[in-house]
Length: 401
Image 1 (cartoon, rainbow, N blue to C red):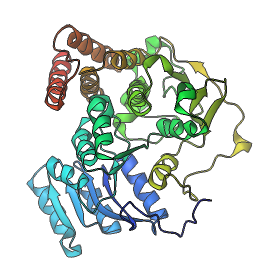
Image 2 (cartoon, rainbow, N blue to C red; image 1 turned 60 degrees about the vertical axis):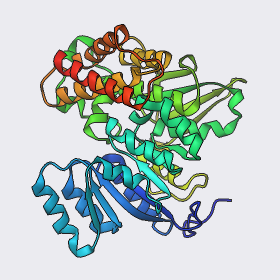
Image 3 (cartoon, rainbow, N blue to C red; image 1 turned 45 degrees about the vertical axis):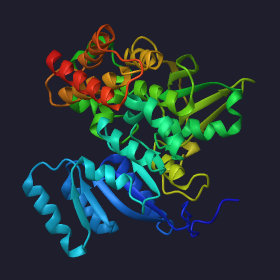
Image 4 (cartoon, helix red, strand yellow; image 1 turned 120 degrees about the vertical axis):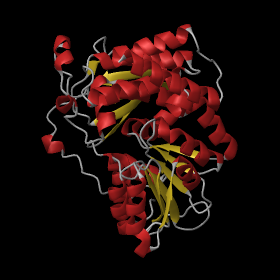
């Protein structure tokens, strides 16, 4: 029987679960803090970390009173001084730089790390958390896309636990409990299709940033929303699913499901398909990771079945070329994930800045990845080689654009 909401969730140390939220000012981080407030008796916020948004970080810190806040990429000296001055009366520690965020992930008084930093910048903190045996609630898919071959063995070696926060991977994680790993035939990730799922292909070249950011179902940060529009986000999720669940490319499928009610499915060898459903509300997946293996009354929006008139499905066909890149990365492995992710980050940012058409995002990534396979690909890279591939891909994408 699940424990009541008022009972404290015990961490491995026997105390209230102590957490650090990395990427606290983003969409996932902000939702994680909402879940923490909802389950306030069970969690203690030890640290918050953000990239550049010092004002929101200060507001969050004043509200939740952590021991430490970290601004990993402060824009200038003035923002450092402003953040420190604002938090000085509350006696909250303030640190700056990427290494400070890595140290926060490894603190002895942190039981769980919510890894919600966007992009490859979240890789090193995840590695530090894994090396120190933390429970990692993982929203930063790029950590596995770039370095799944390092992160997963490291976590296993040091007794770290990785729990997915992405709605699709959380759905698979939950559905897998209906059978044994040896009984799984395939997993099926659902995709909404983004804001352009009904657009003619020729029209995509004229898509504006505002239109691309107008996701029909999910409220997410700008980078991931653009990735959802290109379906590059689903390509990244394919690679993440490969590492999380240990399945090859031919046992991971994608289906377009515009309503985003079914978040993903697992098909077992006997033909049974187990689906996890709910509203498109990230707080459900976040809370499940935070309270796993138990369930508690949640704060997310509930599905109103009286308003669900239909659930539609369509194949993820050639209209979505980003998916082919994801499958190719799973098959090739090595440095290919680092290159795919880095080139996409650059192309995505260029589109958001109005410097390139929407239709060039995926083709640019494909060109950079193709060049990498011809020269520079490493099959079994170490961290330095992965980071070098990341930097090379960023330079190549920037030159191409």
